[in-house]
Image (cartoon, rainbow, N blue to C red):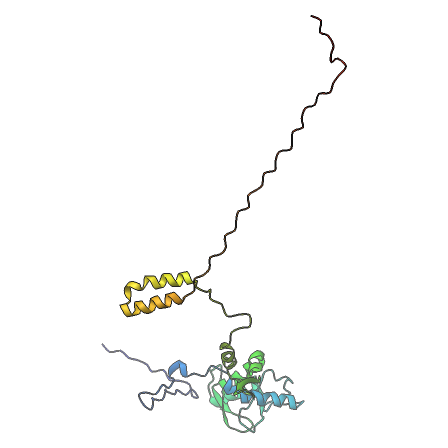
Length: 258
């Protein structure tokens, strides 16, 4: 039984690069997906160049159709070569790249020559810069944000936007927050210490037992709190009983008639 496997060829312009082998066995070089650059630090020079270009010139025209470009740079691709300021509409540059590749069935180009300096450009890099510039305002702001870090008591300003904010967090991580205080441990009473000492008497040799007794004699006894005397309620004495006094009347001395 023979199995035929048809090899699928890639489009021209797509380059496959294998990971370089490590120099030695102890090398910890990143490989595979871990070696991919998923950040925006590589695009910072191109973003800065494009922003300065559209902020400096009031009118820019397309290098292919010679039509006007939006003042904000929307839908415009700028050559990434240093010293070349050629800008083009994304539709115009895409059509020019596809015609140069000769791929009639292709939807997106892979690479092409700049219409200004004729240096080969990668389509993915151009579109990535445009997408970040138009839709990643927050990421661009973080990319150019000046960060401060403390170094030997002196504040140093670094303009690298990709400096991780973990440097500042590490300085604050070693200090306790202001609202957190040192928790005071309750003082152990002398009675508790004496109980622990007595429980260890059986495990100590004779020499340590003598030292323990001497130490126990030094520990001051905790004075017991004074007992409060219960206040007995005083019973009020009964009010004095008034003597019955019978006053003399006019009938006294009268004769009783039987």
